[in-house]
Image 1 (tube, rainbow, N blue to C red):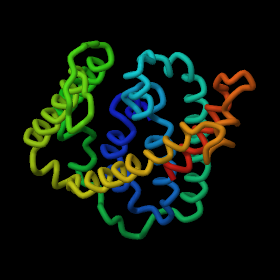
Image 2: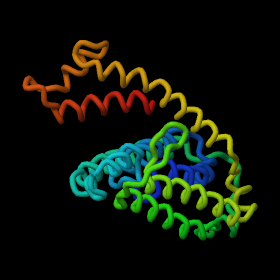
Image 3: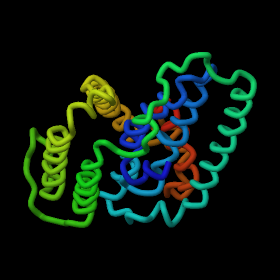
Image 4: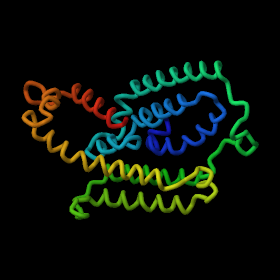
Length: 251
């Protein structure tokens, strides 16, 4: 959960999911381990910085302070993580006492697997570069912009995106093939995510158009629900409406 706010929920999930699976592959009942990992790391963990989640990053690019969420919802984030961890501990303890472990460990412990460390630790330096580029794109304001396939892209955003691609390339070349092999690294999950987001971006276009139609449009009931009588947006209703819809989208 802590790492998620520094390297993103996706990054923290990708880094830790395989060690978590290997650490629990001798358990009889283990589905709950993965489910709570998704809740804690992949969902709630990235709430405290723009590095954690794309919506917070977009807010940062639009002028929201970098530490806004850390200053305003730190207690709420700690509360929900505490509740989730307590629930996980209770459920995990119940299943462990009831069922224990398998007679044979699929991946038995060896001196090498007992060692705690990061074989691809050089990538943490590159992660620092990612953080720097993200911060740069938020703080650097430039009137210079370029037309990229019909989209107006500012110089800071272009520098950030090119820099991120370069860092990804350097990381791929710098990391030992054995580390990639041990982590079962492949491009298919990234291609899957790319298809998913392409689908989201394509289907969100008509939704935005319908929302812009206001109270007279197809989503008039939703627009009315988040708007006060004087025509101003109602922050509390926006919070709940976007939260419910985002939860649906995530699932």
